[in-house]
Image 1 (cartoon, helix red, strand yellow):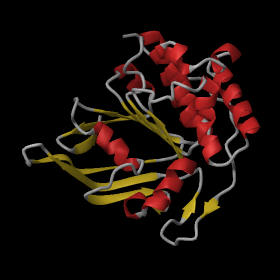
Image 2 (cartoon, helix red, strand yellow):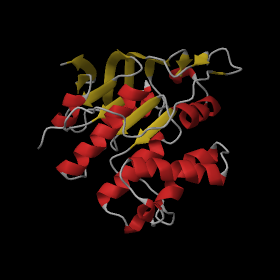
Image 3 (spheres, helix red, strand yellow):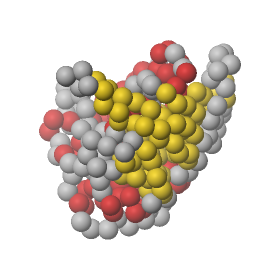
Image 4 (spheres, rainbow, N blue to C red):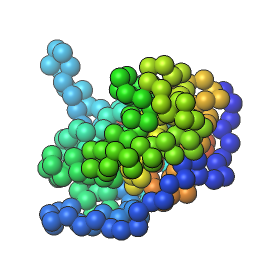
Length: 259
């Protein structure tokens, strides 16, 4: 495995919005791009097919600040994906608190969580989950269309962002099923960043890629955190990726510890 070089400049050069968003619900508080993430005594269990309780998280706690890239490492099945799902409000906690700024993810209702994810969270998965019947640019602009950005403006921003990660207009206009695995993952990263999220959750983003392509995508994601004052949390087995992050946390026996 080759060592990833630390990024020197942002790969995705899009201007983050400066305005804050205040919600009507007092519990939501103030969302800003300069928020921190605080996780306290997080617990989550599942039931096996035999009805046995499996404790995945057993009191995980950590905090992180805007501008940080934090790697989460651990054995397969340790709960890294579950942790990211809880941070993004995709699954409900059994116990504990998750605060993004003053927004209590663990106490928000489904409508509030959907808005939070749409406006402030970008997800990057090991499997890109792109829509095969759409072009690369159409896949990237989907989150903008959901927030009612015009088709013309959404496509313009999508094509610009794809160009900034090395995908030209030919790729932008191609169906994603015709692209290589590395190109598809770059498209997925652009889709995650197109809304300029304050929180990026990446689950094994380089797991299915060759070393060179994986290194390039890793630099793109970490650069976004450092240059755009976003918070990036990356679950990974890739030691080289972890080394370019600001910190690495190990998930073991349901708890997190600093390396």
